[in-house]
Image: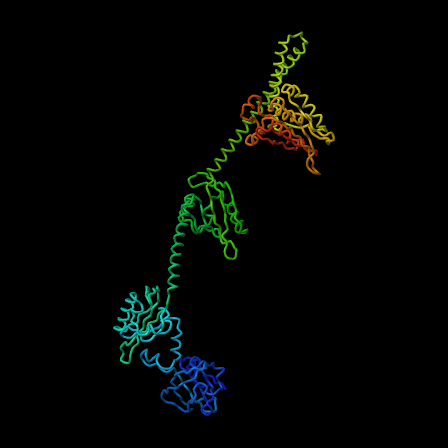
Length: 629
């Protein structure tokens, strides 16, 4: 039967006292009540010990009253012996028929002096000391170690027998001077001194050790009240000290980085502000204050509705809400803002959401860069581009007008010179025919140059168009040969046309194809030394469904360097050498040919090596194309 404290008449006393309080039946020795103090002293829980004999913990104890404290050897649940003092008194419990005894037990007091504390058979206290994770030693009045636990010896990397009997300076070396003075003061005053860091270097066996310790010193008093020894408790905190030093160093670095970051932010040529989700200003940098004309301390805590200009308020607040809701950054360019001095400026603004651990937007980081100078530069640049375009249009108009105006008198000169050369107006001498041939040749050259200028102006003005129709490439080559027959004969060249008879019909503007061929073959004639060979080839290339016709003009002329090839198809470009200057021209022929070929949907290019001749080629698709240049 397990009786309650109230049934025993003990009330709250039973579980509040630190002593072990046990109620047992006087006749049987059976335990009927067991308090918390008994659990702490003997290790048994009340539920497991109640109803069992008292002899389990107090073997050999007579079941009779004991008036004065009697020392006994109690037995703990772990099997170890517990030195205790007990008293036994009769106990009256009206609810319990059998007579009861009240047993009160407490740990036996330790005799004074550390020698006596740790001497004799190992007790629980001695076991605890030997297993402490801290070093403990007992110093006598001569400041030599009388007793020590294994951890104390381990701190100094010595066997325990090399610590016992050693003077404090023999153990610590020079750093022990501090501890020597402290121990001397404790023996004089009896005052306990608490933890401090003792660090330094000590030697043992010729090896140097560095360490930092937390040290606590407590006096041990003898029966006469005098200090007869000092217990020193040491914990090796070297690693912790190193960690603290590293933490301190890292803290200093972080403080420096923080200070640097703050200086950068404070001096950055960017407006920076933080606004919480309620649209309240929580922080801003100096440039933001200067632009808004509000000191930082006056801005913090104010709503954007009280700060932003009315003209920008609705637009800006809409962006704030968008960023908070979507949790995505927003970027605006060229946002106008009227500064406090009345100046209108323009800003590139980034709104960046600041998210918490749950991904919720806590606020917005606003970063704005003054874009006024950039926008002004862009405006001036756009104005210059418009002006250049206007100049280009005027140039095209001038070339078109000039070409038309020059063609009329040139046609008249060409017509009347032809009449004279045909002797319609009368017979001419050989020398007169020679002069007229010169007039006709110069006029044709000048007319060709004017035609090139007129074509280029039309192409650049977007007024150029094609007239596609089915055509045979062979016919175009024959027309080309007819146009250039006199030039070929004059330079004694051989022109070879290698064109298969079964080529598919090509849909293209035949006049423009002839113009391209005349330009390419004419250049080959001009830049090939007398007696050279020029070949015109044609073949179908590419697979279905989009094959095309590839035409190539191959010469044995002077060739072109790779550097010059990159410039060939640009308008008004001529290669800067004596051969080019000798044949003349506007430098428009190849650029016009390129525009004509690309207008058909084809491509044009060159393969050449200086001194080894050139191959100019172009392709034309067989498939229909749009009638656009």
